Amino acid sequence: MFCVNCGKTIPSDAQFCINCGSSVPEAARQTATLGAGGSSWSSEPMTSTPSYGGSQGQMQTPSIPAYDAGGSGPVGMGLSSAPAGAYAGPPLPSGNDPAMLDRLPSWNWAAFLWGWIWCIPHRMYIWILIDLVGSMFIPLVPRIVLGLVANKEAWKARPVTSLAEYNEIQSKWIKGWLILFFGTFLLCGGLIALAVVMDSSSR
Image 1 (tube, rainbow, N blue to C red):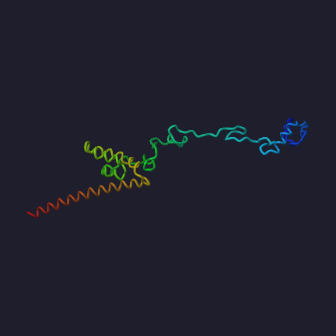
Image 2: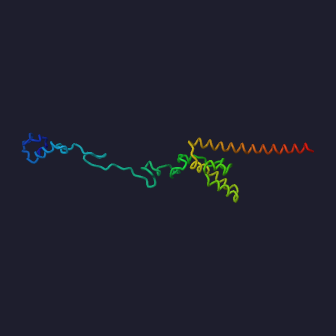
Image 3: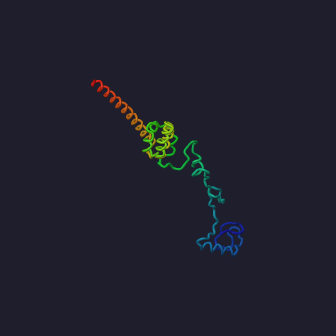
């Protein structure tokens, strides 16, 4: 315990301070005795006070990171801190990385050339109807619109492992259309030539 006069540490059962000689009150000795025998009492003062980042003896509330009004996390980590033009909506139905939307080409030749047929494996079912019905009233316009929106809509709807895989799929669609086009052209040309030859030989 401590002397009430000079504040120095003295034995808990001392009747006089060994430093200044002052008498120790009975109440102080009883308090010190209780503190020495109890598990929750201590005759020693606290040398430091727990704090959260503050100075000794000052309790401070731990700081809580502020959250963006429109984001989903602390400032600097939420959606509002994303670069301008970045995707800020819910997760994509396909599970693909939303950040890749801004890296996709703005035009898709495969979708423009194949139209509603291309939409089926890319799970763009509403565009099948738009292409089929719209082309009956305003030919070519729905196909142009599809070519403009195809990449982003397909990225949202069709799962792929990477952007490279997606680009490879589109390249195969274009190659397939070219093979079909030139194959049909050659086939029709061959049939026409055969018909001309047969007609000439029959005369």
